[in-house]
Length: 563
Ligand code: GDP
Image 1 (cartoon, rainbow, N blue to C red):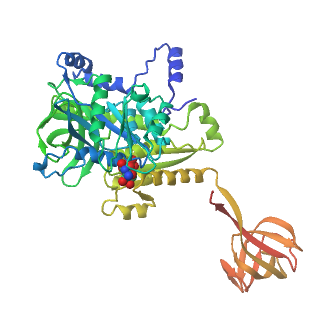
Image 2: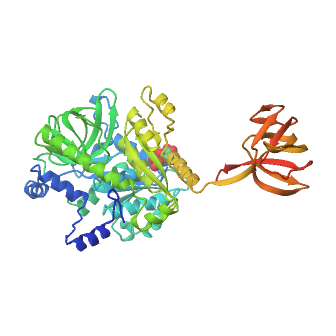
Image 3: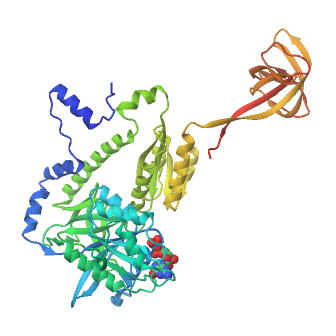
């Protein structure tokens, strides 16, 4: 049995379809989107064929990857400074998520585009959406440290994406730097240096002293020329990928687009994932206004009505109305997909079992962050936390910008915790959350958020309880009372005795009755809720066989923190 709102897997659907005489075809989200666009007379396949006749070379797009602290940020900095000839703009660069430099190569100036959000998360999150933006990966390995776990991870990501690698052996200025060791270490991962008879270019650099940077850039161009045909049709409507987006107080949604085909122009109607709008203005990584951007060019775009996600693909629509309709349809599809994802942990195979045992427990989250890349990365990592089947994690909503009333409302309905990554609540929202009992947690480091949530999930795995003694009393005299049963005239020997507390009766060091409760508690003639050490009181336990000299012990079960 499955309920009408339950998600089923593909095999079940196919079996069910066959049974009912239908041929069930499962389409990928990409296919579905393609059909959506076709219904608006946008035929991507036909466009690709048309492109073939108008191809022109385009610059390579490069991502820098490598282990933490091996110098990715420093290298991106150094590369950017090789090209600060544009001093007419004051040399002020803006972080828009990508930049372009021009390299003197064999007498020509050739541009290279760099994605400057280092790290594998961005790379993987984009790829998970089917957005392949990177042509070449620079793998940074510190010569004084060698191959580390994230170095291997980076190699795996690049190889899975079929992206050629150029190795930058960094920090060669340091004592103890051993560039040759790096070369031999990396042969184990299939990266064989040219000087060892392989086809991977290794370049020794010092990002700090800005040495070897030009050679590295040349190696990128040589690798691109040897391994790839980088072409695109610049003479048509633009398509590409959003690589970063955020909400700017003054300017609204600002999204950096990497154009992959065609030319993007101010005034174009645009659909980006489920966002839409019209290009009001564009600027490049030097902050300069630009009116058009061709293939492999990153530009920050103003004019979208909402903030897209990193990795969302964009396309230019014939008019604003079409753009809005496509965006709306996509949003509806996304909502559906999210609903299905919500139930991800409970599959048909174990649904009844888990339900019967009452073992399902869910931690619901709302994630808000300052840039979509971070939100993506966080969501991605969180969904990968593995704490077994007893606990599920559900991300019921995520987005870019301050924590709003709407977020709190959602959290209230679904009993969720709100995670704010580099964002704060909007005005009066913190009070609202407080009033509704919604917890908001703030982070500025992804890993601490992940650690906390992992701990929370582990805490939810069958809590461990321990007994904690609350107080004890000695019976001095027994009063018989028809109405209340026997009353123990007692003196509290330690702690406090509380009405309602669990109790046991101990006689000469032996427990004579367990599972009792302090049924009533009196001081003189008054009912009281608790009596402290040293005071006398009357206690009834709802248990008859009590005697002078017996000790009443009370305790409660408390949840124990997990190690
Ligand atoms: P990331 O985590 O890979 O982005 O690494 P960073 O670029 O932040 O660099 C980590 C540390 O290594 C910083 O303290 C840098 O100053 C230092 N560093 C980076 N490149 C070099 C280099 O070529 N030589 C030396 N000596 N230090 C470097």
